[in-house]
Every structure is written in structure tokens, then in C-alpha cells.
Length: 465
Image (cartoon, one colour):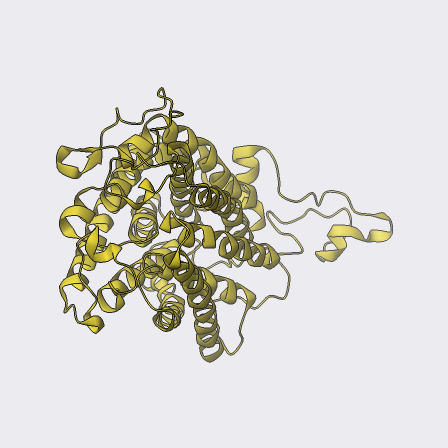
């Protein structure tokens, strides 16, 4: 049995903290993109995901995801790692008897915590599609059902030794399929049943706090180094490869998105730069440990440009994906997954052939075999996640737990669902100054519903927001 490796374990502990920080970062990113009267509800969905999914993960989620194969490799054995067992003995090293790199001396609880943070943020990502109109109780029930029926089985298939990895031989280093395509497909299925926001797309729904957006994107970028480089589960050359690829692909995507804005809208925006960075992070996630850095740069450019264009599809197709989860995470995840079929190289990471049994990409002599595998894996996850999300939404709708009332939506979901507001603009200072004056409202006048000085800020409105 392997002994605990202090270096690998320490890096995975740090990575776990970095990935957990991504969810509060996502809350800021989504909260800033949202309108002011729904900012708290938007952020609460992310924070609630931390609370709910952490508990589910301990008691059965980790076991469903990383337990031994059951049902033909579609799910893990719920009895292997359920939350009523303890793992403190010298032999309690996750993967010590499994065909997985984490057999390199990582305690079970450390790997469990690391993977919990992935489950948390995957669920939280979905929330960006449903802002301003979904009941909070409905969100919690949806998160419970979707994590159980979709995320845990998909994680087993991708990383836990299940069918997609072991039989289909598809690759996903850190979550392009398991996290981003999975969450993006769920977001689409959910909004198709939930419906459009009142007034969309005719009324303005532009971001109310652009500095929040930039801060959230920065925290996501920072935490993503743990997300990607930590997924090597060791400290070695592939860890460094994943780290540098995460840096350069994200940088390239930021530039790609900004260039699209410059040509299309004549002005580059901070919201666009932040969104481009996130698109790059999404696209590089499945490929970061399998491709060369020059290829990561090219991937980032493609992701930034394509995602910047893809977010406009919701206007043409008529689905109200509030904060572009589909355009960024679903599309970006597909780009990154297919990229492996073109540029993956076994010379960079022997895990491709030795463990998964995958092939080199098309441009490294592997033909189109791996491209087909990546497309099949992405399609399987897309269909399953979208279908289950839509089914759960239909059930919630039938019992009256899906959507808030029209009055609550117009007056503000923060007050209706949480009895609090993100900003206190009720008191003007002496001489007619203060927040009302900043918003252009005379002292004593009634403030328009949901209007703040931030809503009136002269920020270039993106077509996509």
C-alpha cells in the first residue's frame, strides 16, 4: 500500500481551497451581471449550492461518483464511501486499489474534498441561466435532484472509472464534459420550461455592477489554477503543463472576445473582457493536461471568438438564458472537448493511452478516432443532462415551485424570496445628496422599482447581456 505523499497531498489541499473560492467568485460574477433587484437571489443560489452539495457529497455523492462500478459502469457503488464510514487508517488512500493516478499517496478525505468543490460549482453554474424568476425553494429541489441523477453519475463515467472513460475512451482532464457541457445542457433544459423573464428581450437587462463582474472573473481565474492543475492529483510535469495552458488559453480568449466586440460594437468592454476570460477557462479545462501551450493559445482564441458570437443565439432561437451559461459554458465546453480530438498528444501525457486507452488527436497522427469519441461523450452528457433538467423543471412547475409570481418578478425577487435588498438607497443625506441624488431622483420622490444609480451608469451595453 502506498504511504501518504506530503507534496501531492499538500498541493491537492491548496487546490481544493482554490476551487472552493471559485463559487463565491462565480456569485460575484453572476451577481454583477444581474439587475440590482435580483443580485442577492443570484448570489444565494451559488452559496446555497456550497451548503447543499457538500452534504450530499459526503453521504452518497462521492460514493456514487468514485465508488466501484455498478449498473454496467454507469454509476458508482453507493456503499463504498458513504458518509457513515471513516477513512483514517494507513490503508485509507483513495485509489490505492483502483486504476487511477490518485493512488499516489493521497488520503481519501483529501480527494473527497477536492472533488466536492467540482460538484459544488457545477451546480452553481446552472443558476446563471434562471436569474430573476425561479423560486429559491425550487432551485434547492432542482439542485438536489440534478446533482443526484446527473452530476454524480456523469462524474463516475468521466473520472470514476465508468463507461465513458473505460469503454468509450473519451478524455476530460478537468471537467469540460463533466462540468461545463453538463451544466450548460442543464441550463438550457431548465430555461426551456421556466420561460422568459418579464419584458425580455425588449427591456434592458444590462449588468448593474461591472466591478463585481471583473472581480468575480478574477477570482474564477485565480481559483481555476487549482481546478485544472490540481486535477493532475500530483506535483509533476503535467501539473506545470496544465498550469501554463490555463494561463495562456484564458489570456488568448480574453483578447479574442474583446476583438469581436471591437469590430461588432465599436467599443471593447470590461464585461466582454471578463466573459472572454471565463470562456477561455471553460475551453481549456478538458484539454489543459493533454495539449501543447501553442495549441492552448489557439484554443483560447477560437473559444473567445466563437463564444462571443454564440451568446447572441438566444435572441435568434428565443430561449432566455439570462447570463449566457449556454453560450459560454456549453459552447466553450464543446469546443474544448472536440479540441482533444485534434490536438491531444500521448507524448505529453501517457495517461491518454496507458490508463484511458485513448488515441492521439488528428494532427498528432491519431486520425479521427478520438474526435469521434469526444463528440460521442459530449453528446451523451448533453442529452442526459438536458432531459433530466427539463423533467425536474416540469415536476417543479406542476407543484407550483418553479417560478415566482409576476408581481415578485417585477418588484424584485430579492424582496419576494429573501426579504432583503442588495443596496440600501432609502435615506438621502442633507442638502438633497446621497444615493437618490446620484440616481437622478428628487428627495422624497418614489424610486422606480429596481432602479439604482448603478443601473443608470454610462456603461456600454453588450448585445449579449
